[in-house]
Image (cartoon, rainbow, N blue to C red; front, side):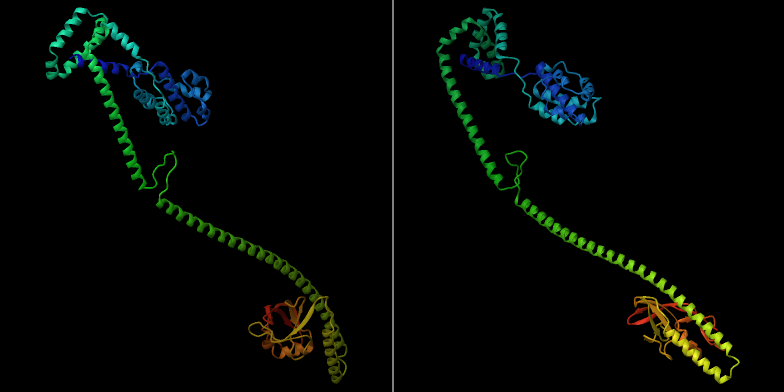
Length: 473
């Protein structure tokens, strides 16, 4: 029985020696400051200066706050501090300031997000051991010293006589009684006599054996842990892509490498395609700019041609006026010689025609203007022939041009031409002229040009664009 009492006494001493963790007032204030800092950091995006602050208390935290955070912390300070925190363990402390505090009313929704950071920092907080072994032992000694010596002796004697029966029938009761005996014996001066008991000496020897056995068991456990870690390591080698020993780094698997290579090839192909399209776009832009330049040049050239055509039309009008004056002079000469004989009139008429034809041939031209004598125009508006000089019997129109590509045309002012077109006006004039009555030539002797027509040189021949207007006299 004494041996069992001694073992239980050692067990009680070990239990008393274990630290009893509890929350102190300082730790409670520090935990509150940690939670408040996390709330303030998420409540205002501009509170990045709090990341470098490591406040140990609420007062220290409030001293370092700016105006915005001082306003936001008012709602957090309204969260009540429980009065029974002295009996809390670390888990209760983390749960209160990491969960329940952030669920309180009046807090900003953005600030509630900081509870995860608060939990992390609170878990890293170390809780001290305010209740020391010496205090418990002193309290135990004080309680035991108040007991009477007679009661302790009687209780030890009773336990000695009924130890075997108590152990067999009720193990729990025996343990309780033995615990009380051990406490009394340790606090009683008479317990010093137990050190000289040979059975206690033998129990001490057995204690060393227990310690050795415990060390062996610890070694076995360590060996099992090492074996299990090796097995897990071997199994982990079969699979790639697991988390490496350094946080934040990943071991890529073969499938992952294949996917990366596939994506890299696809991106490279797209980049090449984009580069090719960019070059094509640049080439098209260059061609577009070239076409714009050509268009501008052609536009300028067309404007220049239009100016030159207008000038040519003006000069042709002047030539026609001069020719008309010549015709008037001829008519006056004819009227003056009416009294002459018929043969003489015919001679004079022939001479006038020759003079007029010679006038047409020798009519002065403006600088840069070239005259071309054209034949009749067919149904498609194409002149059937073109000559450098007047060809009687074939030439019908005179075309004046400055560039050889565009010009204006009129019926040639020549009596021979007039006589020819009067005989067949539809065939010779309808393809390039318009008149109020093209076929009414009875009694008419000459063709008057009201407005010039326009023609262009295309596919090796002159083509009518706008018809000339004429009438007969």
